Length: 301
Image (cartoon, rainbow, N blue to C red; front, side):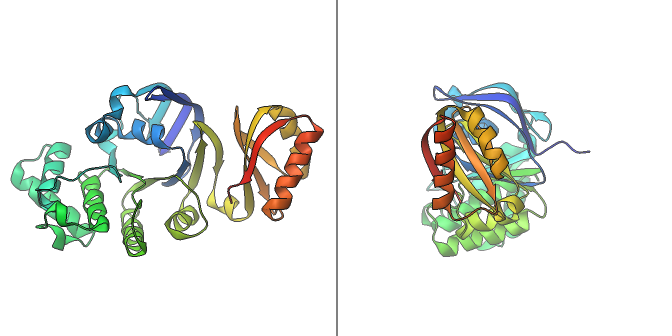
């Protein structure tokens, strides 16, 4: 049996003085959607690449166990198997798209310049973006820039792609292009997609329905892990609880409501539940009955 795409055991990620976790999970399948406060986890996976873009990796520390395809993330053992595409990656204005991809290929594979250019051409061709090869990066539209960034991530044929908010600031046409590209890329690569919000519409909604697994992270805590099939038939309510989480979980269980997450931020998963306003009211009434201190309660889906 192959190793999971991503797994954590009491993992804590320190980034910029803030600590995420402890995180414990094992993902299912080859298409993973990360939702919410994902910056620490995506920075840990990107590693030194993040340092090239923003300098954040210099303050990055991973404690506990975090693995990608069974390889230790803290030691960077996973990086040859992971291509990274992020909205934050800068492209040099004076370089052409092919110049950037040639540089990326040399960095990723160690290829000589001629072979690296061939790899760059092939990466653009795989995304049907060959016409961008000679275009200076400063003249690329936002969606064309993302196409080049995606192409760079595929060089070296990594087993998985980490796509960090790759659709940020794109118009509808740009999002449709990214969606089409992802459908093709997912035939050859596992995909980890990170997005700040989960919505039932748009690109995030489409991806949530096609993903194999989904993790929701709030304020550094894993508050929900669920399959799209579960989400399609459930309501999700996010809660912040300062006291009494255990008795609230026990009181909600007979109602068919599951409280997950913690120690402070949680999600209630409610299969076949009524509309969110009445569900929120039911949860708050139950919390009052068991003296649980709920300071925030609102629907996610």
